[in-house]
Length: 429
Image 1 (cartoon, rainbow, N blue to C red):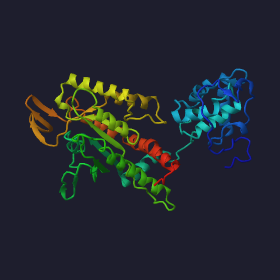
Image 2 (tube, rainbow, N blue to C red):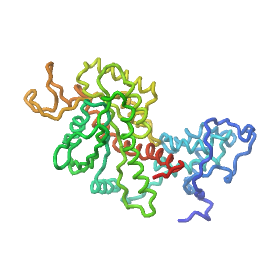
Image 3 (tube, rainbow, N blue to C red):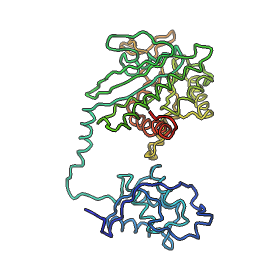
Image 4 (cartoon, one colour):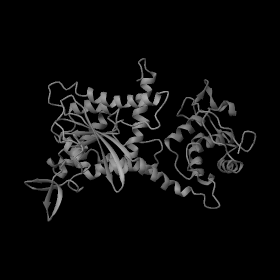
């Protein structure tokens, strides 16, 4: 159905953002915006919008008229009114659009609000009372199962990097995490430790209940053994940027492959020594370099060296150091996160850094075999959350935030790399 010549539809306009403001009572052209007339359609910022049917428009207008005073509403009330119509909280990405369209105005009239709602609807499928109800079966309910089958056929991929000082058990922890001899091993068996400046990558396919995961682990050599460690970060950053560069080169190719193999690093486990005194200056320097380029997840290595009280106090000192040095760690807020997502991520951030213990050997304890470490004062079960936070780390990486890690890599870290290289003076690839 075409709406080009039908007055019951609003035309689709190309995307073009105007300057974004944050004060609804801002000045426009040096004068108070209250003295300016309401903008016409041609005066409004151009954004992608949907074509509204007449019933949809009437519903939006009815909602507007229910709260309007003298035919207008305050720009600060647009968010709440839109949320009522959609029956959900607006995401940050949608709020940005609302700000673009209304922030420069002193009051929002009917046409501007309808235009804003059409732009909002273009960015979500959560339409609330504006959605259309089917009178019978359409087949939409099978889409999830269909997409699930496609994902199972294709499998999943996840690229993990481990970074930290020498002797913290990085390789052991990765093998413990995935219950497989993953790190620094290949089909021919264990490989010799790489040179100090060598970044070593291995890829495995792990299958569980018919679901395949192609896991690539980049095991960075330990640092901290030298008097001058300033050059230790260079090969790590070079590897991260090389994966961004390889993806960008394929993306910009005239003939692009049907599927671009994603080798970008999705998560970086940063191992912190169990000193009990907070972050070392070397840790701060490394993490400040890394957090702009990769999803940084700090973990406390060999945490069985602490009592529970000592561990909690150490974790608090590290969180304070991260905040003081403005080091951003995962999980990052995403534009489409709702209040529930934000609360869940806040809960994870309050648990950071994860206090972990690595152990691949199964030992007999209380009549059954368990993975852990036998110490003079007892047995440390690495799969018991009361002994070790390895299960919490595994859940965060795989069960809960795998998709978010990949999305943040693509939308935040890769986009930053892409913008810098496409707008810089050098060859982007």
